Length: 229
Image (cartoon, rainbow, N blue to C red):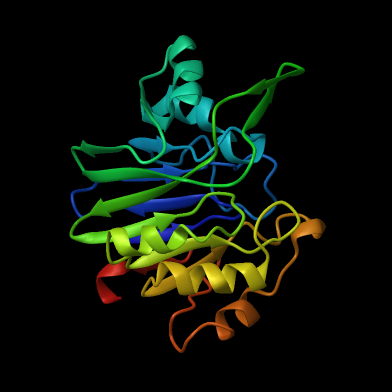
């Protein structure tokens, strides 16, 4: 399985069977993104919550590719009513998809989507645990630090954890360091930083603050093969 980060919280997972998973595809308006919403591949789109910088280009990508949209029930229902294929989940629930198992975890954050001048509150923010190709990926979504992250780490041995470090709207580097100790992932990749001045952080310094070789600061678009963890 191969993973890559594309600015903000956008992560792409390529499974060994050729399934392309796209998480929080904020591309248009994202100064850090290297993706093109008109060409990016996606078989499944996962959304951690309803903020515009996470739903992003979900609609045009799903319309072009026919991708399944997976999110909390409220977000899934919103897109289902707009004619898209969806699968709704809720916190602590898990589901066996063709490509692997997915468990939805809690995140402490808001979940409001602004569309056509109207603000819609769409359920709770979430994190996602993927068990694919014999390996486990945890995408924490936008979240504050919470001690139950220890339970996520105890649920399965996590190979790679994507943790926000931007501060102000999410955990900052100090809390993310504590989160890394709770989750106990083999590799920790910082996300949700540097997109805007308010969340500017030094990812390299954050990685240095972690135990040796645990931090992995990916460049935008850099591909990492999880089998080498």
